[in-house]
Amino acid sequence: MQSVSVWQIVKNSDKEEDVEYFMQKFPKSSCIEAAQKRIHEIRAVNHYKNGDLAKAYDEFNSAGGRNYLQNSNQSLYDKCLEFHDYTSLTSSSKQEELQAFLRKYPNSEYYNTVSDMLAVSMAKNFSMYVGDYTVNQALSYAKDDYTKNIVKSYAKQAKKNYSEYKRNQRKARVRANGGYINYGLEFLDFGMNMFMSDRMLNIGYYNAGISMRIGNFRAPVQFEIGVKPGVIFYAMSEYDDYYYDDYDYKTAFHLPIYAKLKVNLCSIGSKSKLYASAFGSYKAVRNEDIEGRFAVGGGLGIGWRHWDWMVYYKQDLEENTRYSYTDESKYIGTSLAYYF
Image (tube, rainbow, N blue to C red; front, side, top):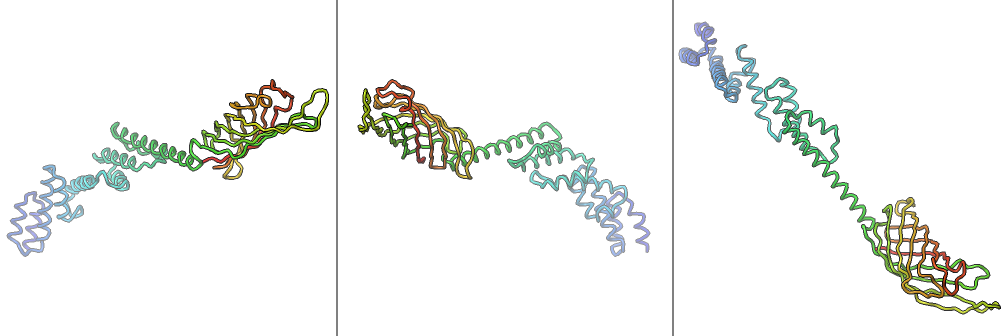
């Protein structure tokens, strides 16, 4: 009982040696445990006064924690706990941990620092699909210009990554559709002039050639150049004062060089396009009696990944050949090509 009475006096002392003297004098007292905790509390206060909040926090916990401390020391413990929670945060801390600290300590002296850490953490997690709302949310946590610039740099990089991703996607689609430049083999280019029943000159031709196309079949606009050597054949009856029923059948080699512009009109299913085409050709080799040097035309066609089929109308621009009838220079034709 004496030890209890003495303890009631000693327990409020701020001197560690007073408590140690009590423990030495009453080693078997029922107050020994309380005395040991009081020593830890006194040490914690001293560490706190010396600015060592980490050691103070450990000693306060050894004293039993907040609820076992004197009322005057509970606020000190709160400060040490706040410091402990702050120092436990790192650049790799989860966003939930950083947000929990801000909610728990809204008036903390470390609030701005942790808020900046949260802003950077959010910025590091920006995906390439990040939107303005998410970026602005991260910026709202940034408390200084340095941190704001870091967030903006991550946002800029994310948008750059998205642009690069879209570019790669477009390139992949272009490659899947044939690339930017295709080379083709024209297996068939066949046409006949628009003859009438009293026609004196019937003309047809068959060409096969090679071409280069800029823009694949899905491109809105495509440009093509090529050369297609072939044979022109014609049936001719001389007409002067008399009309003869017998025709003279002849063939000749010719070499058209052409340029063509295609404009896609719409899709036909998922794997083909309907297009309109305009073209011009120059005949490097020709039969001057039958063909003009230049021709223009246009038509409609269907393009696939590799194949291309078109029906067209073509007209020679010159009518100064030997057999210069009005309709001999107008043709209906069709072509079929394969692109690599």
